[in-house]
Length: 433
Image (cartoon, rainbow, N blue to C red; front, side, top):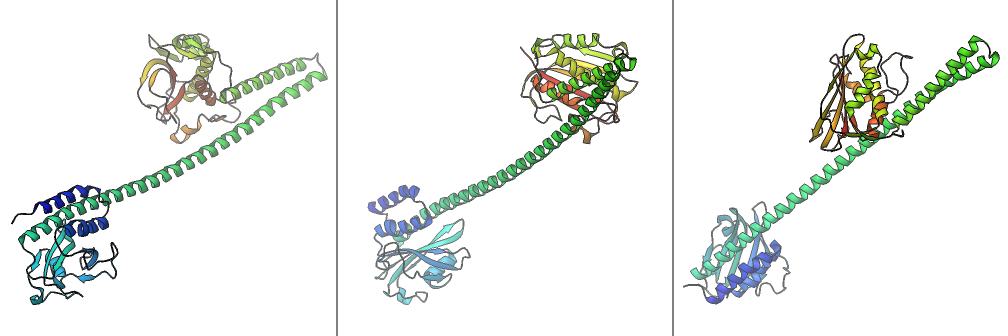
């Protein structure tokens, strides 16, 4: 016999309401009270299986056996294989019992029934529960009731799958959040460590800078004061005149040291204008003595984009780089000064702490074939007063001036070097187009 219209309406309403049921507990109570309870069944009990698949626990009920709303006092627990519901859980097959008095698996209740229908709730082949209904009359259930409860069980199982997937998704989300938080903590800890290391290195550099500056300036003042004493003792002598010349030279060196300090701190007053680097390099070459000029080679590309720089500052940069290159090569070798336009798409300079953003640049390179810089020393070469020359052979701030002036003009400087294969210093200046 086909299902009645009222039964179909109840099942249709169940299908609609399934979307909004938020939890397994709400689902079981809804099925017991709002589905089975409206399908002309006298009562309904829903059991939920444990994870170990060993026991069923009463979790929802409707009818005289549950007069307490959604509260079940002393919920019944049935082992798998015991009684009719336990057998259904064990075999995963529905059962209709026409007369419970003749069924040896029947466990009498406080109000003994005469017939029973029981169907399993399945999820991915596992028994997750059982829907059970009893009736005081024998032979109360037939194929129609079995089809109805099978349909209800199938719809309930489908919803359980959705709830389980939602729970798995929520768990995965919580795990991702936890992983993200852990990663964020690790990143924060690493950044904090990097900041501490940077601060320690900065303080170390400042300590070296101030100590070396004080030492250098004290030496210069000693020269100045000593020569002034000689001159004051007898101003007309040749020794006095030489002392004054030495005092002036020391004073000029002191002034240069102060200028270098300002350059290192990027506080030099620059007169930046739109310029062609090729012209600045050509002017620098013209001012070099013959002994230096004969060891210079140039690769200056045509059509160079203009840049905003201070010509004197670029001249100072070239002077420092060329002097270092010549010292690195000794008496042999040629220093190549190269200019070219570059379109930067990503960070190319391997030693740049923070590469310039993508854009158009003019690159000024100074290349030598000298001894090169050991890898472990590259991070130090821009430190103030860093030098590989013997004590007394070099003063001033050296490459730190190159870095300071370049940065002050909006550019960057990096170096590529290998031991015994020379060094290439590359300066990038933003192009004006």
